[in-house]
Length: 119
Image (cartoon, rainbow, N blue to C red):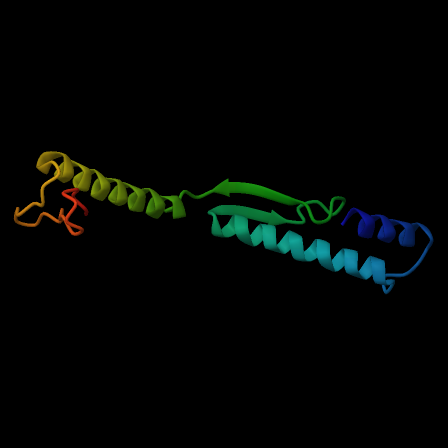
């Protein structure tokens, strides 16, 4: 976008009007990015003020953050569940050596007949 911004600034300095393609596209792209960033911050729990200062268009002011559940909460819980399953399987394999297990609920088997347990 540096080339587009530069072209828009050149157009403005040359006195071209807002209907100039570079000015129109630069303004539209800037407004879209401004709105997208504001929306992302809002969904993430921030209070955002758009265009707080008319001398600095497209500037956002973050006013406050409201703590919420994070997408990371689910990810951490899922990772913990996976780790527990892996640890349980490893403990079963270690406890039963290389033989197939007949324990209630144990999923370690000697499926290929090699004597090596599989989960």
